[in-house]
Image (cartoon, rainbow, N blue to C red; front, side):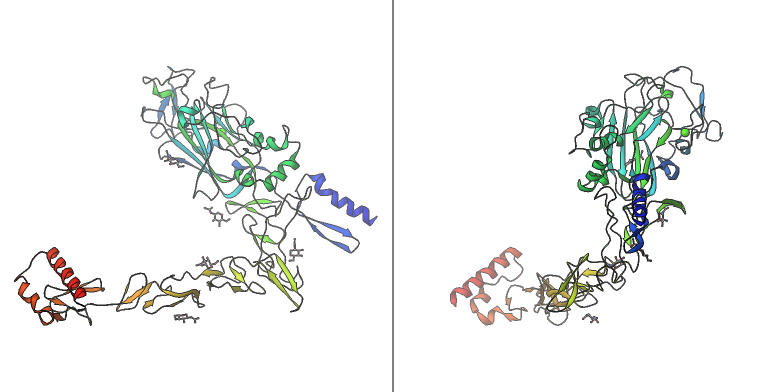
Length: 527
Ligand SMILES: *[C@@H]1O[C@H](CO)[C@@H](O)[C@H](O)[C@H]1NC(C)=O
Ligand SMILES: *[C@@H]1O[C@H](CO)[C@@H](O)[C@H](O)[C@H]1NC(C)=O
Ligand SMILES: *[C@@H]1O[C@H](CO)[C@@H](O)[C@H](O)[C@H]1NC(C)=O
Ligand SMILES: *[C@@H]1O[C@H](CO)[C@@H](O)[C@H](O)[C@H]1NC(C)=O
Ligand SMILES: *[C@@H]1O[C@H](CO)[C@@H](O)[C@H](O)[C@H]1NC(C)=O
Ligand SMILES: [Ca+2]
């Protein structure tokens, strides 16, 4: 009977669909306990949680009010866009409302009055949360789809952007890319960024209104046409480098580059029929919770994973405090069917009493010392508990012992310092004449030239004499007739001939230089 209960509970995750629950209370021979599974939230309509931005300023129609017409009715320009009249306004939020049956509501741009200057618009969607796409992105255009557009994505809340897909009626002309179809991709190219001509043709503005980013077709490469073999997809998502990230976004941007033309060329005499109008943007996906949560909630304006497995963070991307005896790991879809939770473990719980402050996943018992010690400490740590910094690193005083940033590189100047180690506050040990925390400066009366060297001359103690000038603290440039490190010696005292030959005044610098050289050479020869 007990066995049966356990079996029943075990079946739950499968019955509910894969990776739906994070844990269940199971009864085993050792008594009841929690069992943990990899888990993920359900897919949702992501447009309900998005913030939108449309660029450039003034691209939305209606301010001032303007007339427009359609490709179907090009000479009846009686439609009006007026931002101040709710019935005639077309603000961005109408791309995300739910359409009641009947008339579509849509955002609309100004018309192409400035032709031939391109009519450009960016629609940027931001979630402030990593989202994993689970179905196609579908953008619905009224009055015709753009003839050129591009989809971009960001994975870091809009700091960096990457092309996601190109769309054009002629890919070669618009982007110098051959036209391809997602359906023709193979397992090794499933995350290729391509240009498609499928959604940019003119087919009458009522007939084909949608532009897609085909997520399902890409999934189907692994899971089969009806996505029946999801196991294979999950296996691939774990093993193929970059595949998971390909379907992950925090932001999307549609760059609208040329509107529908309704024909092969632009009719200059009627520019009121060229504009963009988007009635809906459908994005289906789930919160990325690293397989540590099955719920994602909208709190204080952003989506948040409800983290399990003793993880925390917006994406369950780290271990909770006091649960860092080994380093954080994402859950895994493998092994099928329940995956691995890769839960964070309480300090002291996982391997006897070996705390590694989250810098190592492994401990080993050293027989002859009779100690358990952490193995392969990461994040530049070392020691039995990964509690020290490696040589060449020092302790970050503002980070806790279990922080990834706990050790900071010393960064000692290679030439100015004795070695690459530093003290607890990051100070390196300097060679003679060098100074500064990293030994990359020189003490007063030293100059830098691949290391610090004592000044030969300067403006204070080691003054060049007899009108000599100090060159970069390295040497005195002496006037004709004087020599010595500080130009302190008159040449006449050394060699009578020089006095006779010396020009009374001046001489070009070059001849002075040559003279000096000659004298020096003679000196050498004489010696
Ligand atoms: C659209 O965004 C791109 C960057 O993704 C930027 O280079 C371009 O200037 C923007 N266009 C407009 C019209 O704001
Ligand atoms: C983004 O989400 C984080 C974490 O939930 C939150 O602290 C931050 O205020 C949000 N930023 C914006 C611009 O909403
Ligand atoms: C998380 O910590 C709690 C104690 O606060 C413990 O009962 C639970 O089993 C832990 N969960 C996992 C997945 O380790
Ligand atoms: C020290 O640790 C804090 C907290 O993690 C971190 O924000 C900071 O960047 C670290 N300092 C350096 C120099 O790495
Ligand atoms: C590290 O060295 C610097 C410079 O010699 C010194 O000022 C500082 O007190 C030292 N810090 C420690 C913790 O010894
Ligand atoms: Ca709408």
